[in-house]
Length: 254
Image 1: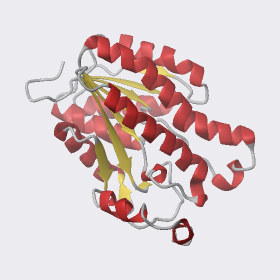
Image 2 (image 1 turned 135 degrees about the vertical axis):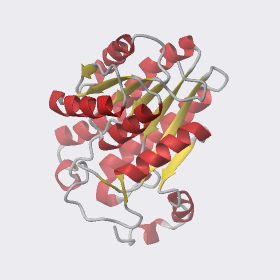
Image 3 (image 1 turned 90 degrees about the vertical axis):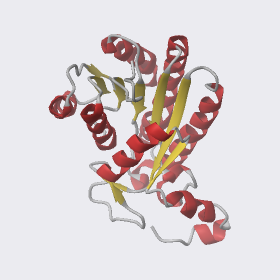
């Protein structure tokens, strides 16, 4: 259960090798989190993350393997993670997605499906499996890593952006459905983040780094704000960008 200051002590991370999720978990372990279940595809990356979390203060870091390319595995993965947690879960971080390569993916049905399954279908299936369990528990928080790429989709990455748009919209609705249940869902919308996912890609305006996003996320968990933007200025930037005609939008660089 959360401590007297509201800090989560038992956490599940779906996408445990994600740079952002890992940085968030490290900060929470430095505060009071002691059990962190890491779920992901790469055993090597999960083991590396587990070592870092133990150094930050975690005492139990069970590992659960799954492949987001297989949405039918989501429910079983959630069950395995909740069982591995060994008790009521205070926080679930959902950081699952695949950026892909737009130029290669857009004319390849198999590759396009891989992006959509990992970025939208698997996370939604996992959230659906998770919702009832947390509602029955009567408490808990969910933090879903979305992206500003889904706020207004661009031609340059419309498969990833479209999948994030669907996930983001689904989470807005799910958050409303959780009102009054004791469970809350928050959406994290980072901009371009310098991480292993974006390695080799040029920076865009308002680019940020993993540590800055994690700081926003952890502070946002305490604030209870429904949507967390990183950097925070993007809330206002996209309020303006959302008003632009499509003909202007498509001409913007980046």
